[in-house]
Image (tube, rainbow, N blue to C red; front, side, top):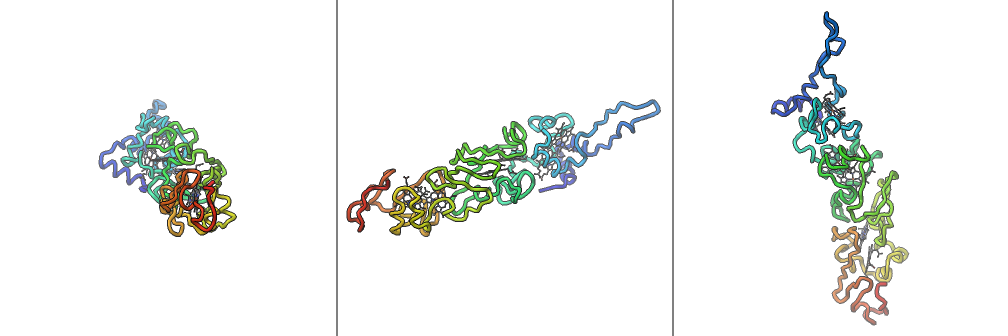
Length: 311
Ligand code: HEC
Ligand code: HEC
Ligand code: HEC
Ligand code: HEC
Ligand code: HEC
Ligand code: HEC
């Protein structure tokens, strides 16, 4: 990012942008009241007195104040930020499209989605980050497709969207979460930086998950039982998981759209999508949404008697 304003001003002025107000301001060497005295006594001072500090043109200075909402920028620079009186339009110096450019203010380090790292404070992910695992969510991984921002936020279209930062923002300098548009709409998130009652991090039987934003979600068993859990774990799953897994069936046998060989997730868009997806490999058996129907479960098909269905 270009951080030296004088260069930008010279460049943009030379291509004829509307920077006059800002330039006037920056080159304002008007005398102060006490200098404006002649033999007749003090003159009325009509020279503008600067409102901002002299270094305010620096992106790190005014940019940070805008992001932290230290001042209400729109009250002087206009509701549309197009400028009012001496207070210049923000567009007079910024590159075209900055209002819709999500990485103008946040994100832009790990990917171009706009999700941090690069938080509004300017810090990259670390102890002060408000939500460390953005990357684990917003890009494709081995276990799920990229989740859109809408899973956890109301998504602004530009800088003037209500509730974003300049207009109608009830919690200035603090990103709001809003899970109502996602698959985990009742998940809780608070100052403890922990997702509580989470479906996504749960066992698939309800909103049972709890995960702190600094936790590592290392393997399958971080959320639900896995091939390695053994009978003790499989018994905590619904229905007849234990009966089947104990006899060596793999996850892929009944969840063939989701899990493949070696428990690799092959159906990324079906995993952690809010629904339990069943796809039984055997053509002679079908899942009836509560019980199984088909040849597996007739007497003598296997060496054990088993006809009770799933539940
Ligand atoms: C009380 C009115 C007022 C508020 C609030 C205000 N400005 Fe200004 N701004 C001005 C005026 C007046 C100027 C013209 C120069 C001056 O007087 O400082 C200006 C100029 C600027 C400039 C041009 C560079 C400079 O130093 O002159 C920038 C950048 C700027 N404002 C950014 C912001 C941002 C960002 C906010 C919100 C965080 C903000 N302003 C809030 C009145 C205001
Ligand atoms: C005098 C010229 C000038 C004016 C006027 C101006 N800016 Fe900037 N601003 C800059 C420059 C230069 C950058 C850096 C742009 C870049 O990196 O591409 C910047 C960057 C920013 C950033 C990003 C900073 C960061 O580090 O993430 C914000 C936020 C910002 N400006 C807010 C505003 C707002 C709000 C206004 C209007 C109230 C405004 N600016 C008016 C020159 C200006
Ligand atoms: C001028 C700087 C700026 C630009 C450009 C910008 N944002 Fe933001 N955004 C912020 C700030 C500051 C916050 C957090 C503070 C707040 O909400 O008060 C924020 C918060 C967010 C949040 C969290 C929810 C919220 O509203 O608090 C999302 C999601 C978001 N931005 C997405 C986007 C997207 C998508 C774009 C591009 C269309 C974008 N932002 C462009 C400054 C910006
Ligand atoms: C899995 C949920 C989740 C997803 C998906 C998500 N975010 Fe966030 N985001 C959060 C949480 C939680 C916070 C911290 C809110 C707080 O401060 O309490 C946050 C904070 C932020 C912040 C403010 C960071 C700061 O400096 O404090 C921005 C900006 C942001 N998100 C943008 C995005 C964008 C853009 C996307 C989509 C590309 C996105 N987020 C996707 C959960 C998410
Ligand atoms: C014999 C078939 C079968 C096998 C093998 C199987 N599942 Fe299931 N699984 C099901 C059925 C059927 C359901 C749906 C239960 C319902 O919705 O009532 C289900 C549901 C689930 C759920 C939702 C939560 C729950 O306990 O119901 C998860 C998570 C799950 N399976 C994971 C796995 C994993 C991981 C494996 C491999 C270690 C596996 N399953 C092996 C048939 C199977
Ligand atoms: C972040 C938590 C999480 C992790 C990690 C995770 N799962 Fe899941 N998994 C879920 C949830 C939640 C469900 C419930 C169904 C849904 O929403 O897709 C599920 C469901 C399943 C199912 C049932 C089919 C389905 O998607 O409905 C299988 C099979 C499965 N997971 C296998 C795995 C395997 C194998 C791994 C490790 C490679 C793994 N899971 C890692 C959260 C997780």
